[in-house]
Length: 156
Ligand code: DQA
Image 1 (spheres, rainbow, N blue to C red):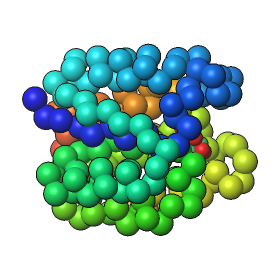
Image 2: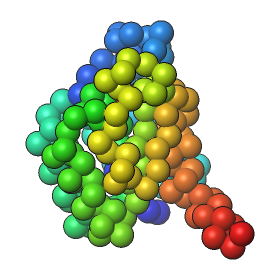
Image 3: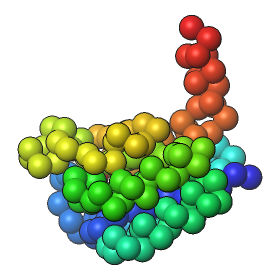
Image 4: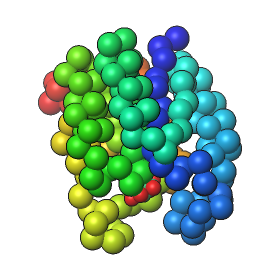
């Protein structure tokens, strides 16, 4: 069973309590268990991390690059300004892994500072605005079913 590293950035431990009208009512544990279950249905196993620490997220991305592990990342506020995270994310895709940026909300429809993602340019793709289902869609893209869609596209 392939492993996917699911990384969550700062403040995402506060889900449920933090702006539930934007981020939903599920707490982080509920999200982790749903994402793990969806992954299992797709034949994927999840390594889940949440950190408020940029350096720890960078280190985890280095390990993913070295191991060739695919990544789903919600960089949270780091999305908008962390060049360190961007450079680490690029190493994952440069090494041949796939990295999907996810957001619970749709940053493009929120404050202007959220309209910039410094991660998007080095990601394989981005899913935003579908709450917990953003993670599900990202996992789907990484699963065999997702690869089938890629091969259909490339044959068009
Ligand atoms: C977020 C959007 C970011 O702008 C914000 O800083 C977050 C969460 C999301 O999942 O919608 O912390 O990444």
